[in-house]
Amino acid sequence: MVAIKGIIFDKDGTLFDFNATWGCWTGGLISEECGDDTVLQQALAAELAFDLQSQRFEKHSIVIASTAEEVADVILPYLPDATPSGLIDRMNDRAAKAPQVEAAPLKTFLADLKSRGFVLGVATNDSEMPARAHLDQAGISDQFDFIAGYDSGYGGKPAPGQLIGFCNHTGLAPAECIMVGDSTHDLMAGRAAGMRCVGVLTGLAEANELAPHADVVLPSIAELPEWIAAQG
Image (cartoon, rainbow, N blue to C red; front, side, top):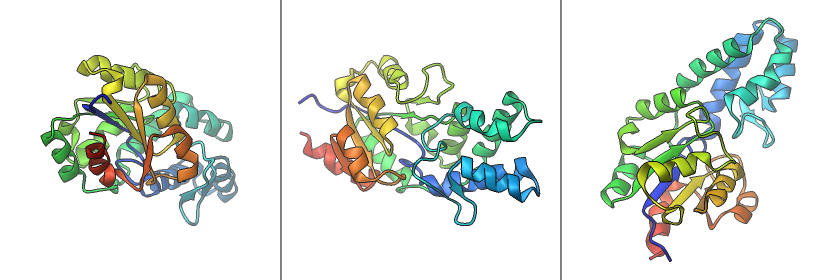
């Protein structure tokens, strides 16, 4: 088996806890866009499959693994005075300020991987600007050799463009890389790029949803080094 040299991580639900970040973002967005109109708040929350009281998502929510443009497309019909570009700008600004809860102690975790010689990347369906802001807030941006959002010129997942971009940027072959993510979009992108795929359970998907698309499903990224070592 070809040795693993490159690791590409999804961001939300993989490096960071999904509900803790995007629950706060969605609740704030609904409040900001709807004002005191509670009927509109409930309608928009239902469209996003989001519970305003618990601040948690249903598994079919479009917010999961979708781009800002895709989320804006379903919100805009509820906001007749909003423009697509204005709404997306507000969404990205709010996203950049969203709190981040790490799925593992990231500074130590990533520094250990780098010390072992792995080349690291991030491929997210978030916009690149808030994605970089989140990594900066966690103090880990410098650990990554490649960071791509859906608007970085490679497209979004489940298409493999970001992962192919990682390979082109680093000179690694897809067979030398693994894609690590919490959604089927992540794993489908990895498969399409010709990479091995690792699912993690720190997002909203369950193991039985990820398993058909993954070489292994782990509780979190914390178990990744042990799995890599076992690959030989």
